[in-house]
Length: 197
Image (cartoon, rainbow, N blue to C red; front, side):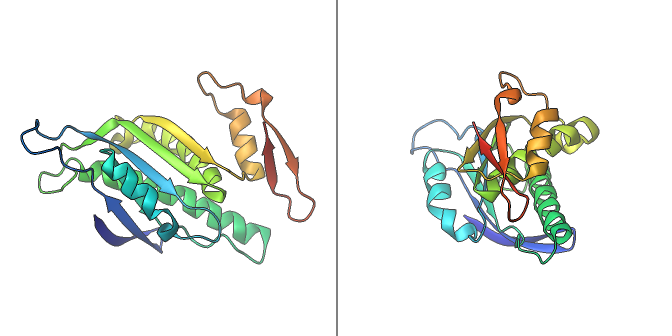
């Protein structure tokens, strides 16, 4: 397991990268493993999700956790800026991991299956995960670092979307998903949206 911090757009994010368990002695050389980026919920840190990352590691996956910026804010615009910052950070973390997988001296070299990447988000992290996937798909069209990456799964655990998440869902083209069947209610206190499927 690797611990460190990265600065993205002027904000420092602590991270943990869990390595996939090595194959049993005498087994074939380790094959490229899938990557799961786990995004924590509101009021929690990466520490609350370590057991899931460790479990995924035992299953043979790379698991990446990073602390998000606090989503609290005095104004609606400051909350929106923090959300956008977190969404961009997830996309940046993925680009960084993909770049590392091309460096011979890096533990990720030849061990990351760029065709099997998943994002998992809990609560507010679910909205971040969803919007990050939308951004990553657009980024893949523009940048070579994400061009070969495939987000194969998006897991939303008790996700709480923002109105911008709902709007993005209605515009985004997804295979085998009818977003017209997704409804939302706006809470009266802060204008946030709640999914009702």
